[in-house]
Image (tube, rainbow, N blue to C red):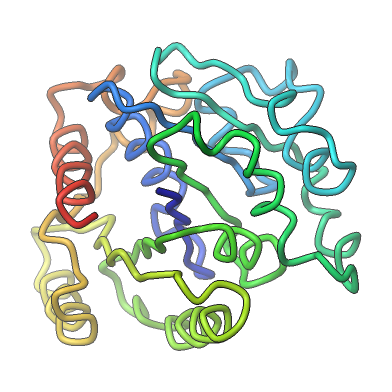
Amino acid sequence: MIIAIANQKGGVGKTTTAINLAAAFAHKGIRTLLIDLDPQANTTIAFVDPHGVTQSMYDVLLEGTPIESVIQKTKHESLDLAPARIALAKLEGALSGQFDGHFRLKDRLASVIANYEYVIIDTPPTLGLITVNAMVAASHLLIPIQSAFFALEGTDDLLETVDKIKARANPDLQLLGVVVTLHDRRTVLARDILDQISTVFGDKVFRTVVSRSVRLEESPAYRASIFEHAPGSSGALEYYALCEEVIARV
């Protein structure tokens, strides 16, 4: 199963969700590959020293470097990482106009997909060619939405892009669900936004809601998922519950 985590709106907990959902699978002993397609490389930084990354997904998607050559082990026995570098920012222009530009990731994954039960793809906060590559390669899409004002802004564009991809490039792409993130349970506004998201997406909204958490925000600085940094925290419990829900849905 290949899950693309996408939302063109930035700051919605997309990378946090990619890191900790993948780590939750790994803690359950599920062989998981985490792919960082965001030029900011925050997912990569959470697991490895970025200065030690000499080849990345940029080389895989543009130069044809075998993905096996860039995959790195993490301290989680069941979790591997395909890292990013800032060079990914040049990928959009380089692939634009290429006849197979939308299919590069899908093609490159073919050689390793059998090694993993789950592949999690972190994407940049855009609907450009990198994100499209992720959705063409994916079997499922997971959308994080922050429970804040303007939370649903841009989701129409995202869903329209999904429909276009399903129409031609990837008819099998399914919306796995919407996870509400950065939720502040103390405010009436956050509760109202949660109700609004539930009204729009119905049963596609996961029961698990990820609360705003200092522990979640600081864990990447320690090159750790929430399960190493603060295993008893609300963030760890919530991402483990989300992992269980994902498994149940698929």
